Amino acid sequence: MKKTLSLLLVLSLLLGLGLTSALAEGKQTINLWAFTDEVPKMLDRYLELNPEFAAKYDVKTTIIATTDGAYQPALDAALAAGGADAPDIYCAEAAFILKYSQGDASSYAAPYKDLGIDVSAVETAEIAQYTVDIGTNPNGDLVALGYQATGGAFIYRRSIAKEVFGTDDPAEIGAKVGPGWDKFFEAAEALKEKGYGIVSGDGDIWHAVENSSELGWVVDGKLNLDPNREEFIDISMLLKENDLYNDTQDWTDAWFADMKGEGAKGIFGFFGPAWLINYVMAGNSGGTAPGEGTYGDWAVCAPPVGFFWGGTWLLANASTEKKEAVGELINWITLDASETGLQYHWANGTLYGEGGTKDTVASGVVMAMSDGSLEFLGGQNMFDVFVPANEFANGKNMTQYDETINRYWRDSVRMYTSGQISRDEAIALFKQNVADNLDVVVE
Image 1 (cartoon, rainbow, N blue to C red):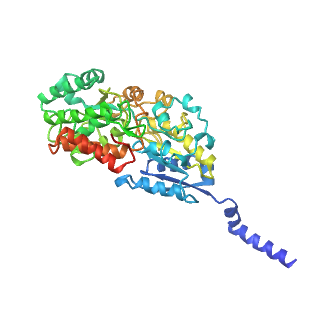
Image 2: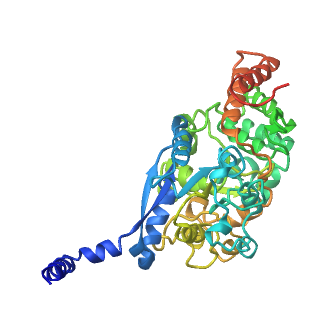
Image 3: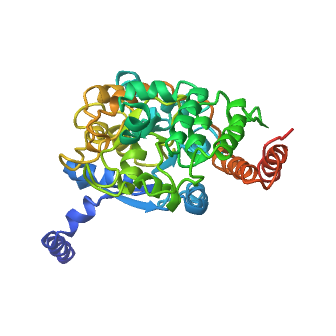
């Protein structure tokens, strides 16, 4: 009797302190690994919008930047170690997504169907096909999808277009710079006569060249130098010898200065998807409203060749014990085409209320019911150009080695254009670097 009374007393004390409730209803932790704060902020917002889910789950975020190649080794180690701290959801960008969806680390990725996700929504939501191709494993299972669509356009200065070509109309400028590189370089010569460069550096063209190629760097285990990618070495030299650019390197201060119009000579345009406008060019335009710096003096048109650049894919750990919850989060970000899904908010800039940044998204259904008008582009609806651009994006020319091989190729090309080595020596150096550092056959 005394034992019973003692147990009742302890139980009543626990209830009074609220500990029984805490013990019985303790939240589960979902581990998220990412290389920027973009996806973590999305999940924070999901928790705010869905209090019932938030009552059951916390999201613990690990962010490691891709700078100096730090993210992948850390993620690989965490996936291999497993256990309570292993990632439940993890992100991969275009430069290395193939490793996790189809390559050496693909065994860790859970098929979306195993998370309770209705993968038929790929069709009903009209998800951009290249993102599906990239996120499908060798068994034919969908294991990764993105939320952005990153088809590329040519982003040009309206004022320079009017001065040189007599118009800033996107259709007419698109016909001036393409299709094809021959027309692009005809436009470059016209710009040169007026003292302008057509691009900032050869890196601007590289992304268009790389992702318009038919085949990837590795075919059947052997290094493949696609003719389109080999042509880049000549395109780069053409820019250099004819003084058609400012010879900058992308992601450097000189590159950003050209976005402000403060480089050695005025630069007509850049190649890129919507994210380049929103998250790079807008912040480096020298203003925040039309009339300040180059803000509002831009427009987008069809590029000389179709391409895509970048993107983030979401994967789930096959070993996660929270498959249903993980599936709910991934579905909201990647496949939900309703007005309450992430993609609708992302396209219309409404994730945190009206007035946010608009971006192109993977769902064609969402894009069709969204407005992509931007002050930065002089009021142009960028979706008119970027939605068709997604149709030209090719997800079948990528490999898990792209990040590394791209660096070897571009470094070799730059040594050639700077006069340090010959064209043949540049190609030989490139092949030697691949042979010495990667498990790829080089002939």
